[in-house]
Image (cartoon, rainbow over all chains, first blue to last red; front, side, top):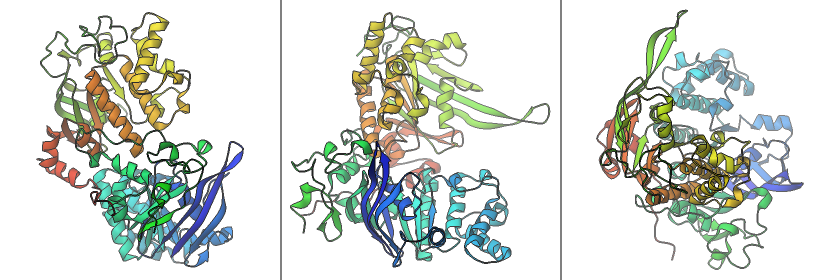
Length: 321
Length: 299
């Protein structure tokens, strides 16, 4: 369905092109959910923006391929790409207000979105909007249709965003931290809604998140990003149970929920290096507890360790199948 | 560890970081902070005469205690009033009624001048360290701001020593003294925020979502730091958060807020094992546990 290979997006930093997204590959199958997981600066959001061809200047996609249902997106003209966006790939963001117009009634905004992509009568679009509002769990859709965004709670605004994203029945929904700004009880409801809709619309979800709890609830597959590269990729169940890459292991081990109360938390030493200071070889080498001689200078490849698990780590390579 | 120093007005032991009054003469057996029936209502005004037509009951008859050297987590969703409680204690907002006793002294009746020593003994750490650090001040002056405000140091050398000591407590070296906040990562900035709070030797730190904006690996570093500071200095925390996995990890007791009211208070393990209030139960069930639990590694 979606095939991303060797995608590289560069930004000029300190006088040279730095690959903020560096040779990222993954594929997403119909009706599945793939999570791109990483901390701030991992390149997860930039990966999503790259495949939507929404990379902000002065960044640019320097190489790679993004194929949607067999069609190469990186070669499309701007108008062709605009037709793909919204219609075949839709996106929702952490903060709904970045996409909602504060001075237009929310119902009208969804109607506009529908009519932008399809030739339908206003009345028909309104009927579909009301159905969608109902489907995404907005109570009293008829009344809410006339609300302005500020009159809705964060959870309801996110539901409006989801309704808008679904209005054109996209094949892929890119969800960038969709619940990070929401309260826990609302978060659980929104995730459940996304899971239901995924089955109902046989839509694939590309989930961008830093939250491993969200991964556990939503994802079939996980790709862990660190400084622009995929360091580990596996089924969600395997990754959460048996992480292989030292970074993934450290990340899971530092969760408070994996410790007894009061027990000292596992720490990954240091901080994520900034792009100007990325090490030449494995970019995790400066923080890793299993460093080999070649780690600081050579780049490890993402190799299969088990049938459903790959990691980019020299310490694991001996065991690669 | 600091020398026990009586009352906030007494000069601090040189280089004292941490509570200055653990064995304060006044009621050392009682709780450090006792909040009773605290009410912070914001008036809703309407019409040409700006008549008060209603109130937003942000905090409505809330009572709890924080023990010396212990951590109370104040938990709730957005709009529950948890942040207003923290701000009410320091009188950053004016409570409408109730009582806030700190080390035996009622704070709500005090005027600004009388409140000053308590502004030193109760410090605050905020969620977003970027907005609480003046971008045009260097680290030395940022961390010394509290020391200067309360006139706690007598010489430049002493001021420098206290700042370096506070930075060391949060594991930042003295090489950072001349830097500006933007030169630091998010985690380091939060360390600066904690260093600022520690520099004046508080008994209580109100942490308002202090680790919520941090990445997982950095959050672990800061949580470990907070725990070790408590162990070493005996400082108490009022830990305001929405993150229940963090609560379970570091709080001794938990108070759950919902729509301005406190719905349940219990020892942490008790609360997680057997929530009494339906809202607490709902909150706990919404936590996304990370399944599956670790398995044996591949053979």
